[in-house]
Length: 144
Image (cartoon, rainbow, N blue to C red; front, side):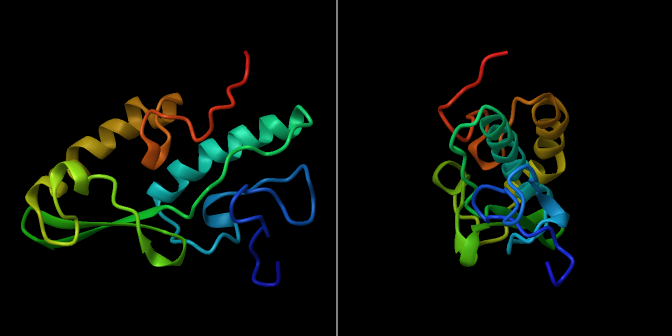
């Protein structure tokens, strides 16, 4: 686009100009924060939609703008800001671990120890799908 981004549909990651082009992360025009958390939610959407496009099917997966920013607030404490398009909160841990809008030691250790483990043992092995955890973004599963 005019700003240098790959212009894509914000939900499907597909180019708005070329049906066989998809983009995500720092290269895409999606109006979300460019974070590791965002790309872990974008990648499975992109993969499922590329496979659907290759099969000549409608693009089933949708990205909602999810991003996350861990905000260090003090020694061994942070606030875990999670949101989707429009800055609307989308907290994934609050129902289980408590409020994410206040400094918390537990969230610090999630960021320090758990998230790197999930990245190397889940995400890069195709077993972790961003804010959905181990659940794929769509029910439409492809064969081998």
